[in-house]
Length: 65
Image (cartoon, rainbow, N blue to C red; front, side, top):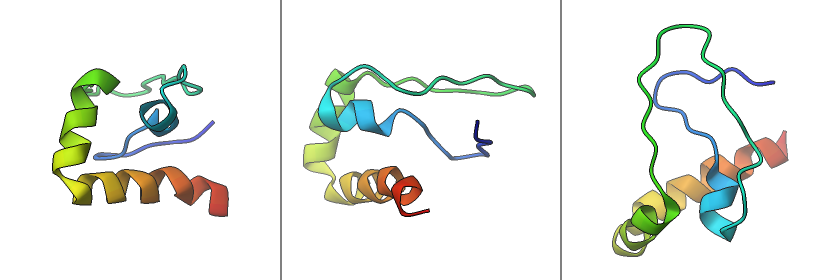
């Protein structure tokens, strides 16, 4: 279990490797969430390398701790 705050995301592995998500979410307070299908995100990642880089950094961070 992990607590996420504003601006954080989950499901990064699924975007990268096209497999099923390995994470789920349960809100304990009111939340505004945004879902983006991999098929919609992939063109953006190709056009905006900075977004791709940040996604990779954020996805790798838990592996380092």
